Image 1 (cartoon, rainbow, N blue to C red):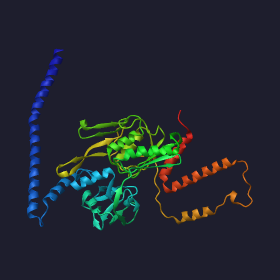
Image 2: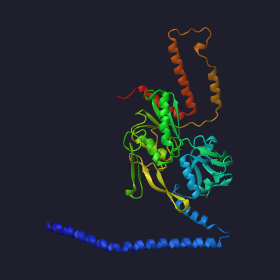
Image 3: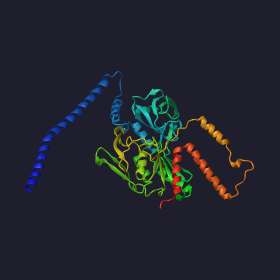
Image 4: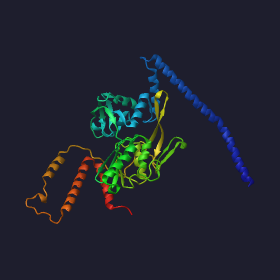
Length: 449
């Protein structure tokens, strides 16, 4: 026992000696690091003074410092940046749901502006902009070499004015120009409608109005359907939703979950992490456990991916569509002196199962591509030929079906009309039609025991 104690004490003393031996070099390293930082700050000051005194043209000192700050932030990742007072004010307005512009969410990739998603019903959407498009020129001026904020500034302008953007699209052999008329963008965060017995919740963004709009819209459509027992399921459409407020993503997820984790965030230090659970905002499942399908695509980013990932991990929803954008980081907007602000990436977020979707995206349970609409003469000819086809009932002198009552005939005609409407829906929006068909199939199986 004495030997053991002595060995333990010996180990402790050795540890103390070793620690003492390392303290000196560590302090020296810290001092050297601080010295290097101060030297580099002195270098920055020297360069600033030389530019101010010797550059070929007089420069605005404030703009010079602002550009240096922004360069420091944008070197970190595509989502960190400096917001001038005007930009900070514009961002606050945007989160309230109304702002001026084109109606596209953009990021930067390989020096060009990449469209994350066009927003429903906006000038960019109506002009045919698509998720994944690269914008190379704005009114003939190249965006290569510009920061994202500088490129966005080029796209801003008076409401009603025209802008020409040059677009490179993956399946197009040559770049092409798109004309867009700037307008005031009024975002309707959630649009709701009934498709037969299915409630469709189209969430276009996550701003202050998203959860209230969803809650109210769901209640309206359930009432229109004649009660929740008349609803066969819900489609939560998050396609081309670029994200927004984390708090709203949590509330929307909570709306369909009874309990459990929704998302967790982890910063550089473990103590900076947070976990967000269901039942924090919404009591119970607003849909009363009805089957749920979530639609996503390459334009679904950030907050959209939080919702899709949470509902997928809890096996609360079937996720349908194509892989999402893959933005798994959290930005904190920090106010600065002079009414400006700093948008800084401070954490990564993780789905309930502990997976990060950064650069990977959310993979759907069922991959369903949205067919591109292209003119096809053969198809048009086939459709014309189909219109010439006739049925037995069209033949002169054909026998009537006297085995059915008028009510039964009416029911058959109603079912046929529903089938024709479903076929039309597949032409208009194949992914949505697929989601609705899934819910019809689950409804046909009947409730679980």
